[in-house]
Image (cartoon, rainbow, N blue to C red; front, top):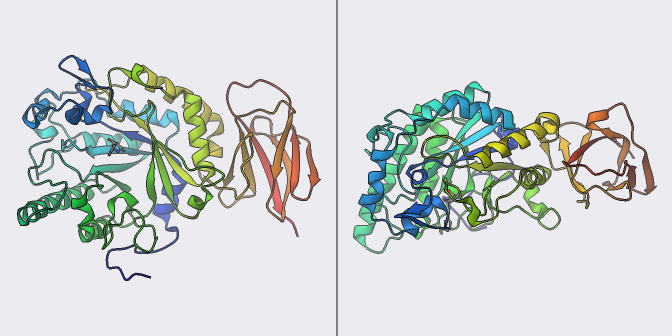
Length: 441
Ligand SMILES: C[C@@H]1N[C@@H](C#Cc2ccccc2)[C@H](O)[C@@H]1O
């Protein structure tokens, strides 16, 4: 192995209570909210199709002009309790909020910058209201923090001169202080979600990324840090120069999921996928007709797919500049929430079942149980669901979660091969069949 000072600190999955809770949450709400929500992808009457939170770059807006959006930030419809109630009904167990995105605007009154809610007509601490409201609903809150900062004069994309070094050191001190401020002032926050760490300037500062993770865990014991923060001694990200995952979970799946047949290696570590509802919009965009908007059932399948591979699914919402949600997002929250209300037990505290993927859908397995869930998206016209079990696993009985009393016919047609007989029907949402099993000889 290559000797490293700033590589992975441990291997395997964390098994402490904080990480077990993070893992059991499975379904989270991502919220991207900042000044970019005010123009919503439109600048000087022109609609830019690229991600709305990148509008400053897409529309080539001068920094002084963009930063003056701060004086328009006054979300009169913002109601943290209402947001938290919607999230609770949707069935999420955690929420990740952008404390500061690439634009540099802070949703809390940071003492290290004037470019925050404190400088806006709104004035109040948004993070404090969200943490209190979501925690009151029993939902954990995590903080997204962009290391990339277009506003700060000392930010550098790369270090190409001694002057760059001096300036970027000032920037890294600023970011370190902000992160310590966040961990100190919001002690119930469970995890830090780092982004904007792809530039050479950060890759050349693996030591700083190591020190940030160390500081956060000292200030907030048990806190969880994603792999995106970290660069090792040689600038390697996510996995160090020895191929070991850095941080507490892998967070490279952005708008994509691992393949359930060829990518089962991900089941060996903790990981999370984050997903947009349109093709590529994290911040609020006025016009969602510019790309495919995923239906509730498409998103629900992604949630089940992710759970079936032992990952967490973080679904993104982009509130408007006024602090309310668009109808499409409210409808998705309702449909998914209705399903989670009936079948959430097949998601929460469930994990990879260690079984071969079948065409009809996905398996999830309740932690520390002999309860196997079959979430069926593709209903078989044959009325037969094929199940291949690992050696020694014997199926005992199966029934619809909705009809526990009506046992389904389970036929073992060969060693470790079963057929479960189901009615041939057209369903309009995925069905969940619960299977009890035991470990045989
Ligand atoms: C979680 C997501 N990561 C951010 C990004 C990005 C990006 C997109 C293209 C090229 C380089 C970086 C998005 O703005 C959103 O915050």
